[in-house]
Image (tube, rainbow, N blue to C red):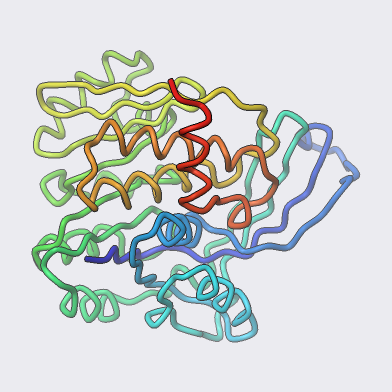
Amino acid sequence: MAVINLGSINIDHVYQVEHFVQPGETLASSDYQRVLGGKGANQSIALARAGIKVLHLGALNHADQDFKQQMIDYGVDCGRVALTDIASGHAIIQVIPSGENAIVLFGGANQQITQQAIQATVDNADSNDWFLTQNETAQVPQALQMARQAGLSVAYNPAPVTDVVKQVNPDWVDLLIVNQTEAQVISGCDDLQTQIDYFQSQWPNSQVLLTLGQSGAKMISKSSVLSVDAYDVQAVDTTAAGDTFIGFFLAAFCGGMEAGQAMQQACAAAAIAVTKAGAAQSIPALTDVQNFIRENHK
């Protein structure tokens, strides 16, 4: 069994600043890093670090092959990562002392992925494989439909949330993964209980995993809601925390782990990630997560 991830690969330009830049302001940065990132790449690395086989479907500029090699070094199968003449996707990330971040994103090569490449990939998948995608590449609705038609289990993380989600038929998706902001935009509701009611009525055939930051996470199905608490840690940088959660949850869940236990493992992985700076380099190994859970037994 494997997870096929149609996902972005970005070059993250990370700046440590005292506060987020205001309109008209020039602000000095105390530190700068150029590192591998992108929701897709981060989730693929998290899946690999969590111990599951992951095939990444994406694209990079020829000049940035070293970032592809970094993914391979993390254990990701990059046989479906195309090299193009288009500039690679990249992000400008501001990180403030509390660990919060603000991001400006450029799609670049991530927007050049073709339907033909997606179709060829899902056609060669095994029937017990999962298909995962986010909202940082081209062809997202088409890819979800292709994966469903190929008989794969499908997970969708509509991040960053855009109008693309309106093109997605809920019946194409087995597992919808959203954070508080995405849940609010999709449901049109601010209140948590109203959001839960919305997903139970409008996504009745899907399981909806709602991540709540320091308040943990909830798994919403048509007739039930399962809640798990977050771990209390001192955050340094929240970049990739959500991607780490998704990768570790999906690896455990599609490997047969009960949902509550998979959520706990994902919360632990995200807790470790926020104590480290950066994106991919902050994602822990499975053994570190297991040790963390034992040391912080609830």
